[in-house]
Length: 166
Image (cartoon, rainbow, N blue to C red; front, top):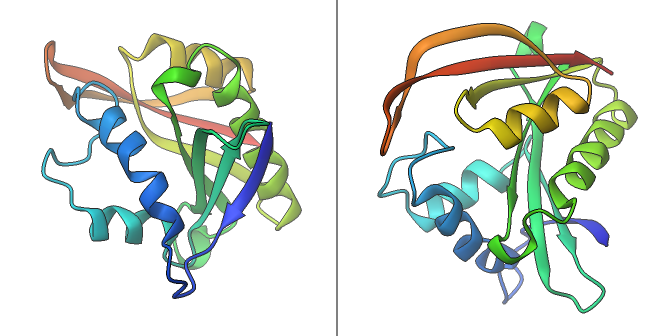
């Protein structure tokens, strides 16, 4: 698996257009991300690629999109030493270690550019595979927001804040 950074530089082909269908498939069920159901392409692209956010893509040996993540400061100013990241995996690549590889890459990249910790602000408690994976990567649940997510089928469920030092 190759992980590379994408950049939006005014090129004729927008590299985000390849990520967009995967993003739509991840957010459509309404069970893991708090994005609005009507999230548009340009808004999503800005959220995932506008500085200071950096977007990294994982591709298979055949060039197929496996997943991607964004890395950015969790907060501006005096909070910019803590990173934040979000991850999405293509449906066909799930269960194959892509999310773990993306997470490990993001931790290395965050450390490389000078972050001292990473925090996830909004991990849906019912997303057990993600919670387990993040914990196995060294993250701890440091906070809980009761009923903070309106799950599409379960109603209001808790959200975790997860953190780890780099």
